Length: 363
Image (cartoon, rainbow, N blue to C red):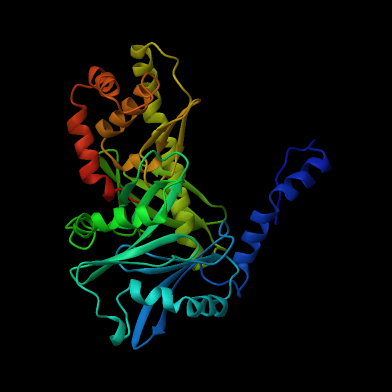
């Protein structure tokens, strides 16, 4: 490990820095060891008579082993980065009774429920259940929020279903709400024609959408890691001592960092211009990689999703206008949309484009 500091830096500051970053330091050290398990690992487990595939994702931010089933039926385990595979297998075996019905594996004597029915049982660490509609099973989770004003069902780009509820609503009412929406849930998950987002490979030659054009990833090896844009290429240099299964994460981080800078550079002039029209101070601009929101208006700033870099410039501009309008109308009332329309008369077309193609812009 090497530390680069200005020549006059006191020793105490260096020690304090090391102390504050010790988790990250150990993580980087642990990744270099030959006994470090892979961050992503494909496995199978035997449940009754079926061989069920599942994916293990290890992460420094994960504090305990958790289990989830995506709307597609894909089984995924999240675990702390140093978790041994044997411990994960033991965890999964304890959850057999919960997993089996959610992926359509039921003992014959228990598989006699009507086609259009709903079954409820706890989801590991949370409330939830599943609907069985037209012979297909769709699991869902119940998420309680202090900010929720009413019960809503949300389905994300991976077709994962959540029932979002105020904290005080009884579980029986939430189950009844999900049951009443079983047909709608089925149409927007199992029956949906909308393609699931493909996974990025982060490999040499991969083409990434970039502000109405495209960017080609080029991977090289060198003493130090860095990235550089050259014409239509993003050249990512990976340190030569990196193990193979760390390379994709490095490329993803480089791409995310590039997107963050490019998005700020593109957006800042638009933020200043529209803020002047609204006669408000131009708020600070921040970026973040978010799963569900393209932008957020906070009391102190505007936050933009770095995935917007994969959208055409006109769509990025729409999200900027949308979030700035919240500085005037902090809601989605008719007055809010009137502000948006005054700034951008064709906002509906841009909004529709975002809804139609936004699921394709993934990291």
